[in-house]
Length: 320
Figure 1 (spheres, rainbow, N blue to C red):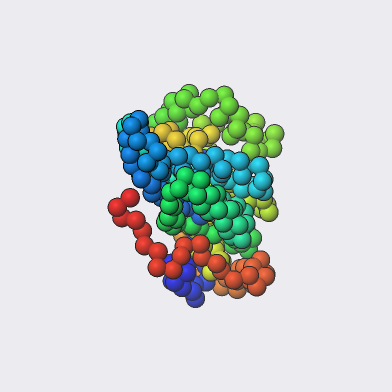
Figure 2 (figure 1 turned 90 degrees about the vertical axis):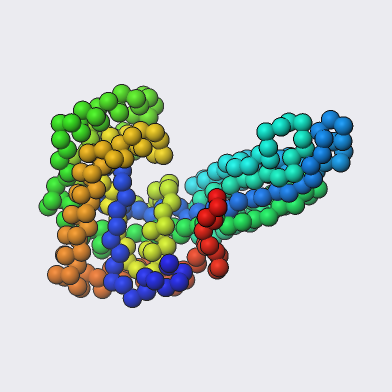
C-alpha cells in the first residue's frame, strides 16, 4: 500500500499495538525480509540407490548451518530466524526431492537488512551447489523500519496523561494474576529489566498496568518489526501500546492467545481507541502540529527515498 502511494497526501497516521504497558512508542523498529527458500533435488531409494539421489533436505540443512555461522559476522542488532516448513516427507528411506526453509531476517535499516539478505541468498546458492540441487527464492514479505515522530509523540503523550490509564475490573485483575503464575522467574526478570529501578519497583506489585509510562524517546530500535514502518516513511506516524495482557507476558506465547478475547484485551483496545481519537482531535484543533510533524519527518529522512522491501508484482500466497 505504501509502495503504491495509498498514503500519499495524508497529514498523519495514528495507530496502536497490543502490549503490557500504556505508552507512546518513541523509537524505531527493525526492517525485515521474509523469504521462502525452496530446494528441489532428485528422489531415490536411500539404501539401494543413494548415489542416484540429490537431497533437497541436505541442501536445506546446509543452508541453515551456513546461516548460523553467519551470525558471528553481522551487526549486533541483526536477527536471523528460520523454520523448516517442508522437510520433504516423513520417510527416512527416501532421498528427499523437495525441502523448504522460511527465512526471516531483521536489521535496524533497510540497506542493512538487504545486505544480510544477499549474503543469505549466497549461502542458499552454495548449499544447492554442494548438493547438486536447485534453489528458488520466493518472497513472502518485508517491512521498513519505523520512523518515529517526536512532534506527534508528545501530542499523544499529553492526551494519555490527561486521560489516565485503563481501569480493569476485579475479574480482569484475578485472571491476570493467574497468568502471572505461569511465568518463569526469568520471564518476570526480563520484563522488569527493561526499566529503571524506580519503575521496576512500581511494576512489581502490578498484574496489569493501569498507569501511563513516561515519554522516553530513544534512537535505539525496538527489536521487533511492523508494517506500520512502511507507512511512517510516507506520512508522519505515531503509535501507542495499550495494556491488553498481564505484565511480563512473553510475546507470541500461549499466554497472549489466552488473553486475546478476554476483558483485559477489550478494555485495552477501547482505551487505545480513545487515545487515538483524542490525538486526532487535537491535531484538527492545532493543524500547525501536522506541519511541524511533516517537517520533522523530512529532517529525519534527510533525502533518503522510501525503498519498499516487497517486490513489484508480489501477491500474497493464498495457498500457504
